[in-house]
Length: 145
Image (tube, rainbow, N blue to C red; front, side, top):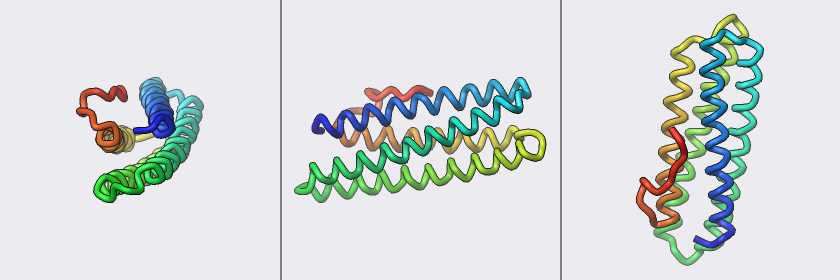
């Protein structure tokens, strides 16, 4: 993997870590019934997911540009990134439902759990794609829990 793509991947990993932290803060604020803080947490979450979406687009462009001669590698990579975009869509849907709940009165625990599950699926997908790009085993990438 060239240095440009490696830099892009590192930025993605950093943004994923930021989202993980925001999700933990949202869970804590939910437990404390801190409504205004939950609204801020949701806004922060959306901003980071938007940034991750940009990161993935940049990585896709740079990886494909630098690997034009390898159709097999490109196919697996593109499929993995398409899944990532699908999971991002799921995350936006989850956060929309959470916002509706918060507007009504309270975030339902099952909505928060759905967000956590979809976040875990997204992270797993990104780990697999990044490891494939780097030719490394799954355990070598640490994106938090």
